[in-house]
Length: 165
Image 1 (tube, rainbow, N blue to C red):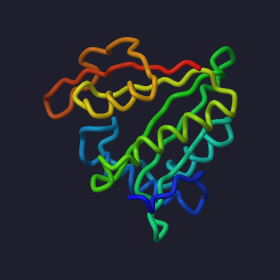
Image 2: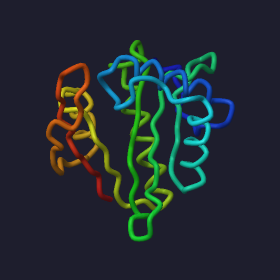
Image 3: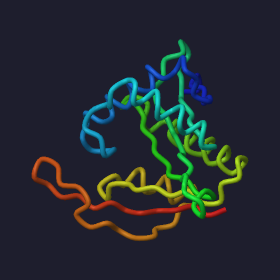
Image 4: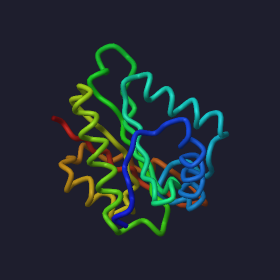
């Protein structure tokens, strides 16, 4: 996994990012989506994050394929622009090798450099590995949205976390 590079997302990476989102979404357990949005929506999202002063990074393997992403979208409303919301995902065979930690840390560092002072996120309560990672990166628990999602007849809580610089 040492041949994984963490880089800023460019237009050339958007299809790979879109593919990764679809793979993770169809697992139905790590992110709120259950499938990827249309490719044009993914393209618009990546561009809007960059245009809004946020961070959008991808992890690419030795041949340049996107294997994961981490984004921090800055909030657009006046009074909230010092903060952003983190989202990330990795293809299954790249989990547990430190790629997620590298992605998240690189995105946090870039957000700090761009003047963000707060990063927040929501993570499903059953995603214990992700919660541990976020805690290790300095995120604090801020609350729980009980029964935030009901998918396939099962409720799941969302843990609210934030990192303040």
